[in-house]
Image (cartoon, rainbow over all chains, first blue to last red; front, side):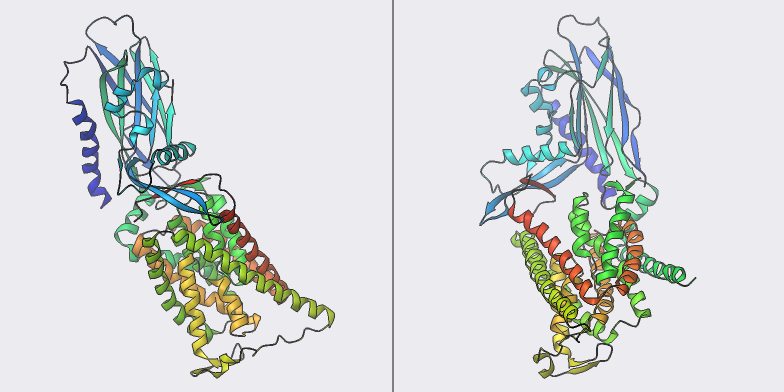
Length: 265
Length: 307
């Protein structure tokens, strides 16, 4: 099921910011990004413990390097979107219980932004709104009726919790730019990765203006035993359940038999 | 050694999981409880999503209980007839419990109900058992030889119809209270995401008047089947059983269960009951603290949209 939807989802993800960009129909930029990824797929094996992706590239231009405002590069890697609920606890009658909740229709399962200089210095709010680069703007929609007056603390808490376990990251100054021409960013994907299509976006900025963008997908998928178990669990849940029980019973019997042998020398 | 779990979609340390399984298996063999009330909170703690922790915990309980049952069958301390009757009640109760759980989650606040259930039941049972077993131990110390425990004090168990002879327990009682105990434990077990051994064991001793010697084996026998049923239900209805996680817990669990069973044979019944009572009270206290103390983080993230 999930696999059938994955290409469709990737298309939708690609289409979203493209539609946003097409509005003013700009002239071809004088400086363009030419980029590559060290890998465009990540295999999740049983011993998967995260992965490092190197995003590298160059700035192509027909003219000389413009003087004055410095050039900046932003790299954003975004995991498949998820629906989430953020809940808040309050004290009622002496005990702490969940009182308010905010449902978020689309939050990335992973989001990392790497930049050449601090993000707030190089990306003005208007450009951020347009391209949705910073972490708070990566969350797209609230779902369902709003039950709380102020949703801001909830989204702030979501970002704080996800930053704490490494799923959302803002790494200022980690993109290395040489001679205003060559750049490179190392993005570490954590071990608790969700399967699906990850999008990589690269933004080229000068004087608070995005002058070119580049995007490439990364496919993260389970392989081997991981893939087999995952598919069996989703497609043949009854057989999967019976298999789990059989393993449990066999292990229980084996331990019992082994201890009987040890007891009776 | 990190290992990636295919259903939970997180990477965890394999040795931690084996160790966790071992501790819970030890409890299981020692006290005849499935250990669900320990394993589920422990899995939450190391970052396994709650739904997967509950379902996979049930799968692990099957293995450790089955291993324990085999050891008890060998020692002839399983009342099979009692076990089957309890199981019949348990399956009905468990199915009703799953429905009740779904109803509560639609109303919201299912977490609070579950947590309150834990605190109330663990607290009551732990306090009762501790008080009773301390008194029994005290009596035994004072008057030298152990007096037989006063059974048959619940007259109502004998007056009801549909009487059955439970030879291994030395009881001739109505099967209705047995079915009711099974069903009640089934409901609570499904609601709290546990096998229900920690409720079953005291219920068998104090409500049905079974001798402690056969209680543990019979409880394990019943739990093996009940958690197998729960595992299958979870696997089919919500795909939340992570077999990789289960295997790691099981490796530790079955070993622990065997050690626990042999250790249990050397301890006196009163001492076993005191230990179980203390364990139950400790878990209860931990959960109560969560309710009454201000949590470090007031916000939490749950996957999906709650209705």
